[in-house]
Length: 145
Image (cartoon, rainbow, N blue to C red; front, side, top):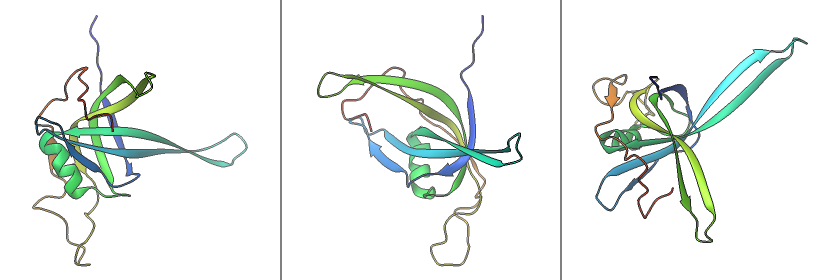
């Protein structure tokens, strides 16, 4: 039977991205993304629920995310779910579920550096595809984040 591991998210960053490099000099950028669902319950009360997602981008996509994304910025993420595990210093097994970016699109305008409301680059809605696949089931020694 065929299977599919695909995630599409549109949300806002919860904090500025963090860029690191693996020992093999591969860029990896992590950030949290909030998606919010709003609805009206049976009593007519407005409700809201926010889900937080751990996002990981690799290669050139990681560098672009670090350069252009900031806390509060909206972004479209296309990727896959991956759960990795490791043992902490006390030998306790830990797990982390992440969204590995395969495609990213910046939404809205970039934060202005000169208060002139200018956008970054030539096309603020440019579609960036990950140029380096995330390693499958590989945990670098200097990771987790």
